[in-house]
Image (cartoon, rainbow, N blue to C red; front, side):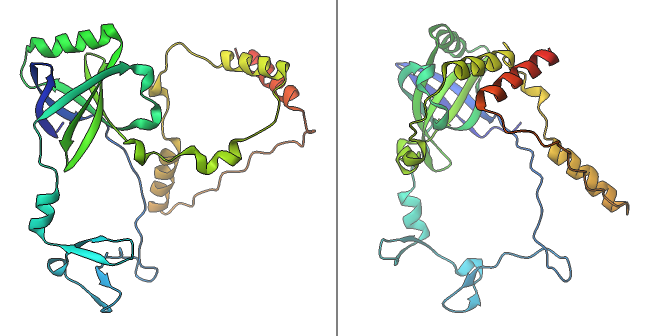
Length: 262
């Protein structure tokens, strides 16, 4: 695993040397856009809509668009001066309860490990956070951006999550009208819904049992096509026409179905 950042945690007068490693390795499977005639990949071109011609990369510049649509062109030296200088410390600003970190805040995930073996301060910090059930909130610069981060105990190390800034999170006000409802929830409906939730609840979440079955099927079908075999379209599941049921009847049927499976 390749290290992506090294520095230290600044906590009071304590300085803890650490290293960061990416915690996520996404598995993607995508299609390329090809020419419909010769089936070769289409190339990306830097096309100028004003000059009506392709522009070589070395002849491009960067600019900042203003409200009136015009651009302020910046030199490489000006851009370099404007960018945040790389810092070598994660400055801890405060500690909050874990419940205070809403899911929508979380962005990136990184494993944090001590830069040297047997660093007592690192494991002391880990155990203190775990015992207090707190999250350390800090700031640091990585990839030419200042990040606000949350540091929490994870397994036998620390997990650093970069967080979205408040102004990056869209307000619910834009869809509030769709959320407003005068619908009353019936007591029996609520009771049955809670019963169904309890039936499907587990004490331990085992994410290992979930697989991307769509990609697995797609790879299998592509392998068959490569061998010249025809891919059979899956037959749609036949469902017998059922009478429209009320919500409470549907909930009751769902509860009975889960009881039968148990």
